[in-house]
Image (cartoon, rainbow, N blue to C red; front, side, top):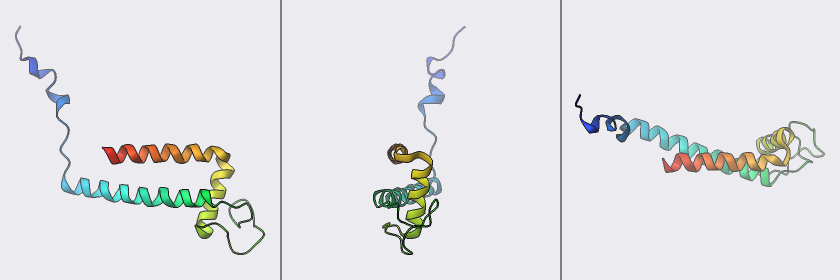
Length: 103
């Protein structure tokens, strides 16, 4: 029985070609991911327990969070669900974004 030695490796050597639209959508997704990660970091760093947010009505009407009411709600919900492990969740999301950027 004879066969070409290249037939075993032929399919996995070639990466699928990325079209222009697919690359454009990847760039848009990466840009939106960067904006979300940056906003999430600002919201986590400026978290205040006195902000009116998801789990509390707060002690003042205006939030102290640099992300405003949305940032206060995101950081409060994150710390409510995961506590200070939310920092690890942020780092995992950042690593996933960096891997997508490198691809």
